[in-house]
Image (cartoon, rainbow, N blue to C red; front, side):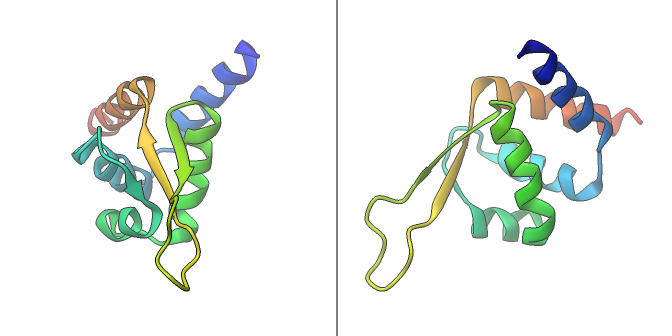
Length: 102
């Protein structure tokens, strides 16, 4: 299992794009708060197609926790939320710093 996590960290670090940087910055803007997918996409200025694969990678690596809205508004599907873990906050700070130092 640790080999898989190690590979995942290396792979995410190797895929540094401007979209991922924008998503990381949006998550770090208020690291303790819950982020809704649509709002995060708008805040980062990226498409869902760029954002959700990165969020899935962060979830798989344990850098994000997620859940579902308990009582959605009438007629609307439940929304998924994301929250940075402590490890995720440090990972994204390192990720952003790595982008700046390139």
